[in-house]
Image (cartoon, rainbow, N blue to C red):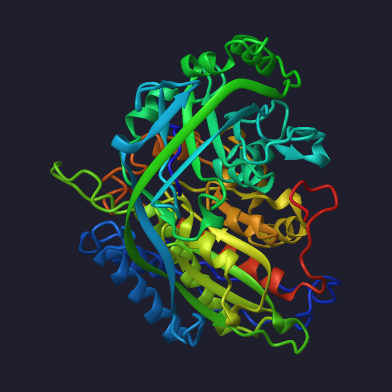
Amino acid sequence: MRRFTLAAAGAALLLSACATSGSSTDLNTASREAAPVITAGAIEAHIRFLADDLLEGRDTGERGYDIAARYVESHFRLLGLEPGAADGSYHEPVPLQNMTPDPERARLVVNGEALAHGQDFIISAHAVHDESAVSAEAVFAGYGITAPTLGFDDYEGLDVEGRIVVILAGAPGGLPSDVAAHLSSNRTKAAMAADRGAAGAIMIMADGLTRFPFSRMAAMAANPRPSMTTPAASSPESLRVSAVIGTDTANRLFAGAGQDFDSIVEAALAGERLPRFALPAQIEMAQATSREPVISANVVGILPGSDPVLAGESVVVTAHLDHIGICQPMAEDPICNGALDNASGTAAMLESARVLVSGPRPARTVVFIALTAEEKGLLGSAHIAAHPTPAMGEMVANINLDMPVMLYEFNDVIAFGAEHSSLGPLTEAAVARAGVSLSPDPIPEQSLFVRSDHYNFVRAGVPSIFLMTGFSSPDPEDDEGQAFLRFLGGNYHQPGDNLSQPLRFDQGAKFARINFEIINAVANARETPRWNDDSFFLQ
């Protein structure tokens, strides 16, 4: 799972039939025989290999990740899954790069006054242009958001063609957390600015409006940043230069505009609609980026569907295989093994695939993908969601597994995004068959809906859910999310996320069973999954 800032007997689980005889929503109406067992031992075997020090934390582009990818491929072959890459193999390359901005060549000049890089502004590396510059008038466009269904259009009546758009970081208050996170993302805002012809963009990290201060961003400005090499997934090609500034520099831009920046911040904090206007500023911006290619691939296995009509539709099951590698090179234990993030999710995917292959073949095609570069910014899923291979058919649903925290007995699961599509009722019924309940997002302030790989399938118009172990537990010391939050505040993204933790492999098996139930239900549903009519993400 991408970074965010919050802080026992292994009994075999017998898989019950997914189909309910006579169900109007399930094509598999015949009674299923008892499905094969998913054991705690099977989950343990996968995690012990994937989280071993030999793999050095499975960092994207490194030898350890490639070993893990070969491990997944070997299991796909054993299961009889067909290769799903465009070249007929199991490995679909992802066009990756590490980008580094050149601070010596970064420029921001306001009305002839050159500002100081790292102090007054930072210039972002560009995914496409090695060098680019723009000189233009500036326009303030509020949050830089267009969302007509919500009554927001910050670009309405504004001519930003060829100009530099100045926008606030974040989104208006009062929105659902997942919608707000989507609209707040740099990727969304950059695309909206580029679509309206802007030549450059300046994002304001305003004091009191953003979680992280500008000074924190400035301290990391010179670090290499991973990216796709394709502009649509990173920096739009037409948006030639992007910068980030703080409150002090914003005050300079707004000087003489008739509305000082402090009043803009006050209006934003009060939830008021923000004014939009031309700024009395002629701005020059320039950037230079060096880049280094990174070689890594998603691993794709296909289980063809059995129904002559529905086999062309595919249910895509994803789990990211990468982690953050040798994360503390000077420490006694330098490796972030990622046992729970996300060897556990990969193990659940492999075991649910094994069970699905062993039973009646589902009506729809099921595509299993071990994703690379999730920790680098959801890049492996960004590529495959935007460029599905021919073998994947028409993607109609995505079920994503990321970081099941199998340190406690859980009574519920969370399916982020279930409320947005017809996957919700299917998921709720399947979860009930597995003997647990479905709970709403317990930490909406963390915006997890946009922090894992399913989000890129959402952006591609595919109904999606992201499964995670829930907050309810029969143990009072673990209940109400205590065990989950202890992990987030402790071993998450640390060397301690390794095999020395008290891992509950029986709970990993339970999670895999739940995953199987959901996959089977979606793959056999009579109706093609669809967005709810009132979902913001309906396209």
